[in-house]
Length: 252
Ligand SMILES: Nc1ncnc2c1ncn2[C@@H]1O[C@H](COP(=O)(O)OP(=O)(O)OP(=O)(O)O)[C@@H](O)[C@H]1O
Ligand SMILES: [Mg+2]
Image 1: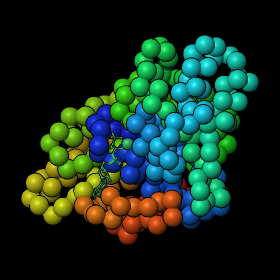
Image 2: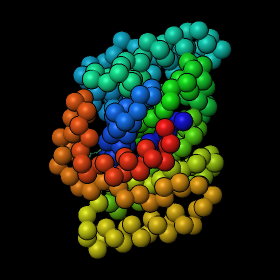
Image 3: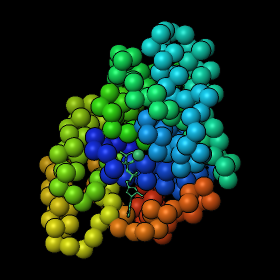
């Protein structure tokens, strides 16, 4: 199962949801989990490791693939070298990102590239792959193409509405199955309720996307999220209901 955590808007909780889900699933099963950091900001990589540039990253694999997509030995070798086990976990691995990924557009890759690379490296043999897609359109498109299910985080702001709709439209074009829309920083205001009602309607009007979990309960505004120290394996209590729900749905 490959889940892409995507939204075209920055700062809506992609890294928060990806890392929480990776940590939660790794703690609750013995199965092997791979967190793919596909964001040049290295959000997910730097939660588990220092923010130092790694020797090998997903960018090197993309570059190798762009040079010759049939050189499966080199592509697979680099993909494997870019994966590091997270400290404090026996079964959580991170495919690290690099700031160089900001130059991805120049490589002229097809939307299928990441899907292909995951297959070449046999990363589909991990029990669960979670991709933090970042916001670069070419990469978001590759992540949605590569995934079995899409998980869309969003925040309760006006600016989030347009890009979230664009993400849903892209999922529709790619015929991706959607796990759910997961709101973060939800409060009890009238405004928040109105936004959620609006999203519930959009979900209702797009049944073709599958929406296994629909509009999720989400993660309320919380200071512990900001301070969450996932390296030590502590999942903030406010995030537990949504993580449990996703985990249950995955049937691992
Ligand atoms: N429930 C919450 N309560 C309070 N703060 C939150 C909550 N969820 C996420 N945040 C904070 O919001 C910020 C943005 O979240 P995050 O980094 O996960 O977004 P992102 O989509 O990955 O951003 P980017 O596009 O920059 O990679 C972070 O500082 C995060 O700690
Ligand atoms: Mg991020």
